Length: 621
Image (cartoon, rainbow, N blue to C red; front, side, top):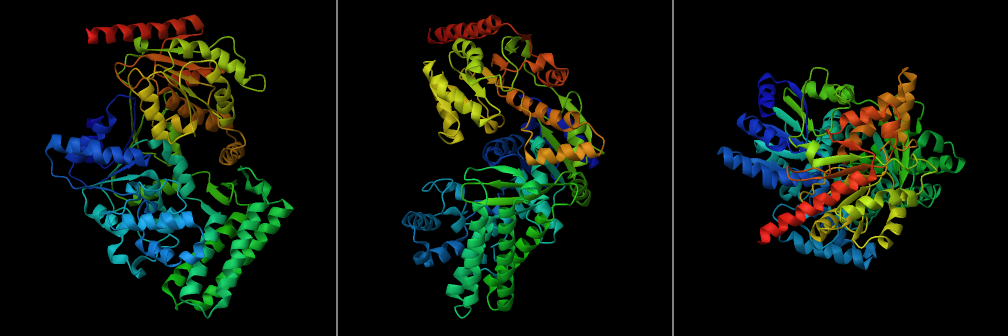
């Protein structure tokens, strides 16, 4: 893998690599990247992997190669303290009227006197989802840039300068794509141009790119604009009462629009929902309120630097809302999503290949895309077409693990196929023998919260093992508790299907409730299916199946993480065997022996328990 990347760097080419779990792909791309002595950007799927690369893997390889290398970690702006916004909101405490929020702002202020880099991740005094964070960080919309009074001591500016001067910069996909969009619309660049770009966890790129190449307007954005406008009126432009009126109108219109949707969070097709009379009226009022605010702010442009920024924000929301309300454009998905307090409206392009490939062409660099899950069957075509990688070389490197002896794939025979007939109790009865045989030490992965919660209600009464459920604690803490227990059962959905690394005896069984086809009412999927149909294609084979195959590969990859790991992968879905498309799934999984016999799977797990007990006795002796 390292040799292939080295050749790609020399040729200024493109390379797509699927490297199975345990290949050592992190070291395989770090070594040629560092040896090349070129300007490098490493983009990862998550902030957690960013931290691991920067703090653990990179220093290790740099020291082993004895290469002088200046490295930098660059996160999105929401990860850095904005001292100007902090001071502004502390000054306006009387307007907040929330003692808990004020207390958290004071704690942030205390921390701000100690921090060197302003990384919010260091802030241990308040929760990750604290309401104070939007008050002490900036967005592209509300940042004053060089006009900010605190520009010289801005933590974000310092981090970007360090990245610009570094030899190697570690970012994440969201930041990279945000930079790509900013370059597209002429606002400059966050990430310095590079000679080599490496994407780890590259399978996430197409969907993340689609979200960044689209447009979004949310009631939260409008409310934040109204709050900032009201603050400018009360501090700088007290003679313009219309600013206060505009802020009130926008805030009320945003809240009223949310009331037109159901109480519970939902997502759906905006083309359909926008035809609802109440929603249509709510949108019209919001458009009128933003338009009024725009006209009033226009009268004060030039009197306040902060108001000038607010005027630009208002203009961008006005423009984006007009695009989202024009639901007749082809090639886009129009969708909405609600939380308990807010609603967001989205327009997302169905194809990002042209824009992504144009950006690649503009940056004269070498490009490497790697992940453990890029192929569907034996082909990279699905991934390369999504990103427009027409000239890329491809390389498949399987895991070095001995799957025929380390693992077993079990598909239960006596279980109804997924659908109305499959009840939670039936699924649990099929899975229970394997949970018992493995002595806990099990991941039970679900494709829906509904089924997970039903099993969570039933399972604790049937086993003596600790039962951990996603959502009851932060992901990191749940994993630590799972490993520490040594015999726990973890029930989880999508976020635990990838990026989770549990090695050793704590995990010996992974159970997957069904083949992970995306919900047919998912708006972006719906739009892609319709687009494929209009092009004369087969939506199931070209859209739904490839996505499900990649997701299943990720989930299956949780089981064997090390040369010493052993275990059973149980997929509770007979379609894997009974349907023709099941062969595509099976061809994409590691070469595990297969069985439909419950006793054979249970015996495999019990034998593991015996072997581990003997090993422990030998160590004690």
